[in-house]
Amino acid sequence: MSRPLRAEIRLSSLQHNLQRARAAAPHSQVMAAIKANAYGHGMTRVAHALHDVDAFAVASIEEAIILREAGVHADIVLLEGMFSADEILLVQAYDVQLVIHNLQQIEWLAAARLPRPLVTWLKIDTGMHRLGIPPAAFAGFYQRLSECETVAEVRFMTHFACADERHNPASARQMEAFDACLGQAIGQRSLANSAAVLAHPASHADWIRPGIMLYGASPLQGESAASLGLEPAMTFRSQLIAVNSLRKGDCVGYGAEWTCPQDMPVGVVACGYGDGYPRHVRAGTPVLVNGQRVPLVGRVSMDMLTVDLRGCEAQVGDEVVLWGEGLPADEVAESAGTIAYELFCQLTARVPFVEV
Image (cartoon, rainbow, N blue to C red; front, side, top):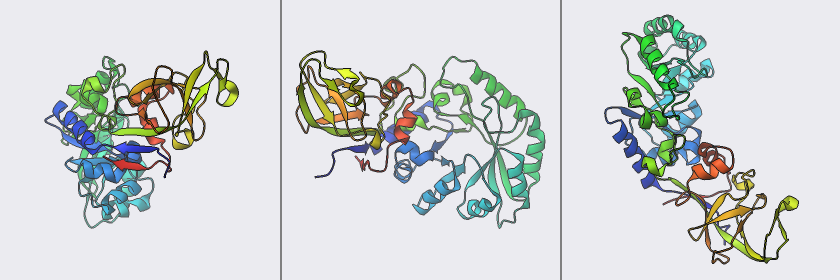
């Protein structure tokens, strides 16, 4: 019998969350972000589940190639553009659209000899200060791209820094800067990430770029995924592999950091940081045992973690949910001082994935 740990991916929830994005922005095309192995959910699996989107966004040409070789025919946008000049032949061969965010990338394009020109997205830094050209340089960059024989079309994008804060005025300032920068330039536009899709309808433009919302986690601070109409696509499940009857004063786990306050049952779950569960979660982090919330106690080990079973009827073999159905990943992430994105992405190779 194999170890009982698994990550279940509910394909219908991916589609549900996509429809939530479409309903929020009914007049926009959808570019689904599936970079980083679809936020840990399995890139080709997610691409096929979301086969009706207008485009997919990835971070590297290697990710784009994986999608094409898996039979994905939708448009693919390379969010960070080319990392070297020799990638342009692969971009051409695999029919990928390029984001342009610096002068060197334009020079590589201009020097290339291609059988057909490419669709490009000129990224403008309106306040994130990560990738993108400064607004003052827009006219020169736009002219060079427009005159480049290897460019078929120029589109425009930017990225929000604070869209997850519904009432932060920074997003409105970025929208204003984007519009002012482009002026009368003609071309399709994209601004909205998941948070902006749900909280900033003025940003929807021609294309929205939902990411974390597709996987069922909340993109907005202080607002639960359920309140936003999202369903968890991943449920991280395991089982109890031991139930120990401990005495008052007994210590649990490495470092003897947690002490039993009374005689009590403590359950051992087959899951640890070697599987990607965060080692630094605090005691009290919720875990579901047979659908009932119980608190984590003691340190997370490489292969196991321990839970307080007081008030819970449980035995070896009973089902445990680490996050997902009935227990939002956002809540577990908060206990670990991180975000759901990281929980999803850090699951290790020894965790089997099952589609449901």
